[in-house]
Length: 131
Image 1: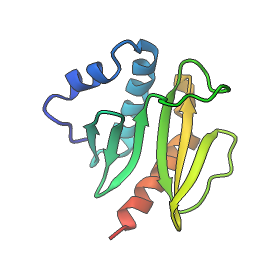
Image 2 (image 1 turned 90 degrees about the horizontal axis):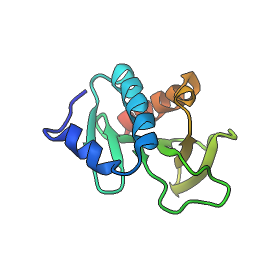
Image 3 (image 1 turned 90 degrees about the vertical axis):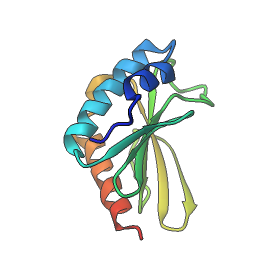
């Protein structure tokens, strides 16, 4: 996976004060790096974005935490052509017709599983088909 020059320091800065979320992100990154070795990652102010030709997923800290959300979690966002019907999806919206954004809360490393990685594979495939 292609990493920016200051990636390790940028990730530490992004998760400053959030060690549990950093550990969840590191587990997610290992899985994403293994599954999408041709991908790129970019640390931004509000999210860490994963790209192929286009953005397909992101990881972030919850900014507007809902009352029922866990205190410690990582938000994994995936863009798909359809709405996922799963209790694991905390929020979904359709910003453009036929483009669904899904936010999945990860609270434990074992939630970075075959199902989540399958959704990220779908998101990769969907993003690669974009013009």
